[in-house]
Image (cartoon, rainbow over all chains, first blue to last red; front, side, top):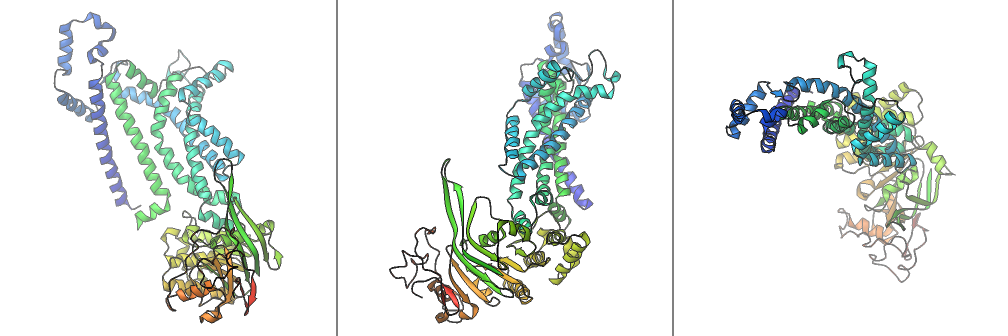
Length: 330
Length: 310
């Protein structure tokens, strides 16, 4: 792709991102301001009985809670633009630093689950779609449909029961041994704690990519170019690898990058089951304990994260499909 | 080279959960192609023409059933035999550019066809692909194109090159003039004539009787899954030499002739079950037998015809 076109593409995407963030900010601000959470109660927490109405008023005045919603929104949005997301009330730390720390923990979990489910799902999809209605296809399809309709937390609990409680192979919770801090643990300990949550996310994530790849494989195996390859005397194996896989890979890659949003949603549930201190668990806590600044921060962050995944999918699609590449070039 | 006798193709499909239904696509087909000649199979769209090529190559879908005899080079063409020789001794020239993989460069695909045709060596295959493209006046740079970048005429030449990169003795050309303008169509047919002149047998499947008459040696007329007539090209000079009323009507329908209204396809597919001549409802000459009994194939004036009144 020529550079000028690529710059134009990036510019378009940036504008879209800004519009998206504006809309997300507006909507989430509206929802939070209509929610029954009283920001002062949430801030003060258990000490609520100790403060007088006068003190409440001082806080409300300092926070500008008496001002109209529109003014409050622009005040908040203005600070967001300057990079000030506020202070998380449950962690007593700037929101961005909480998100940063938690995201790193989640990142390895999501990366492991994402790559494993992507590779495994693609391979299963190819194996199933290469010979429609074969025994292998039926088995894989049954697995994929079962997993597609199974809740993440349930799979997590089943795996916990089997591997942590019965077999005692994996730790029962957390990202590192209890009583230690993140800095004290070594790589193997971290990986050991990561295994089960990652497996949970992978098992579930495999379903979608498998079914999608299978569909594309069947489509390819019934296509006219495969008929021609057969007419030339190519074997089924040769056809699968020379023709069908290539055509099934394009949509699979796009889907895998576009699925980052779902991965995020899955992580929320899996981390809750495994008490894994990642961004997902933090989201749940922020919601339950009324940490409004943190919750809003995570909403904005996840919007950027998902948007980034989709944009990456777009760019990769443009780069690897010769039809898109050449058309952009000529 | 190739002889097909009383050949039929039918499909079974699940009409409901329990019962299977059979639909017959080709009821009774007879064809013979000799080395060095072009045999055109002419029929209306939907008459099951493309299935014929796929059936000969043994690449019909799994729910298809065939019956009848196919002989290739004098020996019966069994499922095992066709598996070994397709792409080597029999090659398909497909209908359209959709028969090329959209994500592979055409040069790669021609080279692949060369390897499948029996060349063991990668460089030899590349060389063969190069000369096949050159034979059809395609520049080396074309090898680097993707199928979507080709024009209709170019695509046709690539498809012909792909089929002739090996040393196949029998070529099955499926609708070679489809979607081409008159000039490109003439060129495509010219290439088939050249191939026949070098001693190959060409089976040309088409609905376009007018343009193929210029290059073909014989014509087999196909109607509703049944071969009605096999005629020499020279018979198509006046009404008198043709044997079957359908062929006569087809000939008369051409703009260069009397341009009378074309005979229509049977409104309800006979499905081979009525037993009569498939054309009797539209036939001007039909007699009492025509509705009940399918006429046998008989020789007449150096050709074949299936008609009670011929």
